[in-house]
View 1 (cartoon, helix red, strand yellow):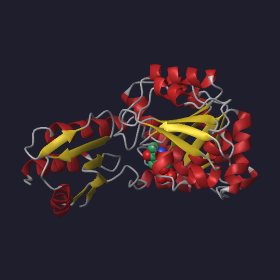
View 2 (view 1 turned 45 degrees about the horizontal axis):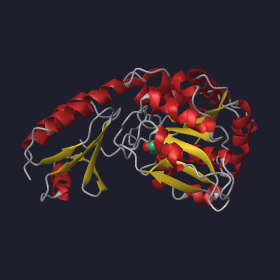
View 3 (view 1 turned 90 degrees about the vertical axis):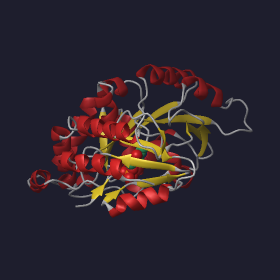
View 4 (view 1 turned 180 degrees about the vertical axis):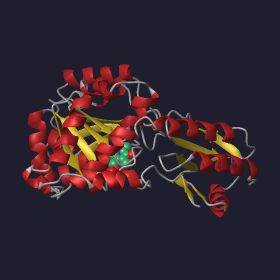
Length: 341
Ligand SMILES: *Cc1c(COP(=O)(O)O)cnc(C)c1O
């Protein structure tokens, strides 16, 4: 048995999810005739109190579409230095939208309203790129699953409004934040022009993200998705997996969070451990003590059939997820305590 803690994207659909997908009603979604996709889009829009949604094959395509919606070539967006849109979307910000990034030195991937206000270029100063968009991530990925305080997001929103900027939420792990902070999705819906939400991370669907916004914006997104090659035909089979995940898997995120915290607690007592970043959700970032080799730890865990990953710069990452069960967890906790470096 292999225990993969590299990412929460490695989950495979359960038999029940596959059965549910098998029974989906489908149609040609490029003609907007797939009832299952339409239902999923409407359901998510309703959950977040937004007007409309659009199904995408990936979170990357949903984010890239949002950036294209809110910017013109030559303009600039503001994001944290760890932002997924900057690091892990293949340079799409410049490739797809011709936009540059002003990166801020945030705390665990989170930026403040004050930092945003200080990073906006004077729109009259035509030598600089025009700032037009702020992107935040909740929870943060490279920042270690950190969750924003709603108050800070409200302040950033006020800065955006005062400066005519659009506000996009990369909500790939918004479900983790909502569960960990006991928030309601509507609290995010009122703050953002667009939100991308992911069904294939903690929720365990094999594929799928939905971009949410007002009707006019999502109507424009339809064309951009088509341009990017994201118009799909009988995709209701995949949207059904998303519906199943929303029905069954949101509440289970609590277990992922508890297990990540329990791993952190065990790690904190080990001699070879360096720094452990605060664990708020399902991501745990840590390092080994100075002078010890993190690659050796990765190797030793691999010999015990436990896979974890390196983020570079001495940082290691563990991500808990739907397919990481209690028996595996017990084994991981025991194994960690036996390992020496
Ligand atoms: C995973 C992820 C995405 C989307 O990734 P895809 O692999 O394209 O679905 C976007 N933002 C964050 C923060 C992520 O972790």
